[in-house]
Image (tube, rainbow, N blue to C red; front, side):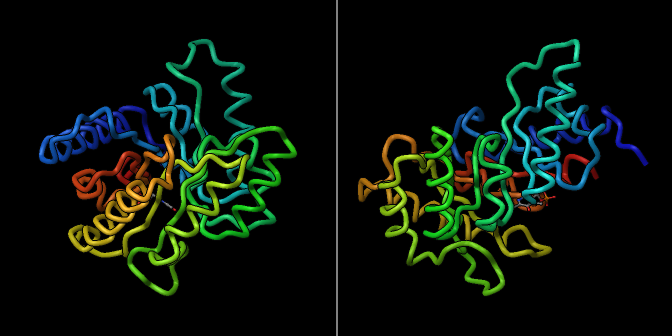
Length: 241
Ligand SMILES: *Cc1c(COP(=O)(O)O)cnc(C)c1O
């Protein structure tokens, strides 16, 4: 069944209320938190509804679908009568293989899933060839689950140091995925760990001026992530269910 705009609008209102409540609890301004609408499991028509509702930060998790959607939505925006409140920014949030960097690098506004030196080198080299600077986050495996992507907590600081030397990367912060669980509170330790790591990297003077984002929190646990300092929450299911 197609997802209506009203349905998304109601979900969006509830999500914004919960983000605001978490911000209040943590003493943070709500404008510090950006909602990335994860569109990986919806159809193009639904993405158009998001644009109508003013949501222009969009996330995809697979490189080929990412590239395809960027093309389709670009074509739609060209045809569209009403201007968007701001240009669409595409977030690459899923695991990225080195041989899939090419199709996404020019259009990715932010890559959340840089998780190794080799991937960093690949993105840097491709960005250099295109004469661009790529915005990236280092993905960290805070929950230590072996099946999870992300660098080890203990390797993050040194990896950040190396990434900072790459001229065509702009290291803008850290990202993590909490363990899947029924209970959102189970996610809190991973978020706390990411924030502590973030603070440590800043204290060491490694991050630089652009190092300011914490991408953490999904449909099940975003209120907790916001309490713990998230600046980017990646939400799919809660917008569309
Ligand atoms: C799918 C996905 C999300 C969104 O998950 P929901 O539970 O649907 O909100 C967030 N981050 C990543 C990396 C994802 O792959």
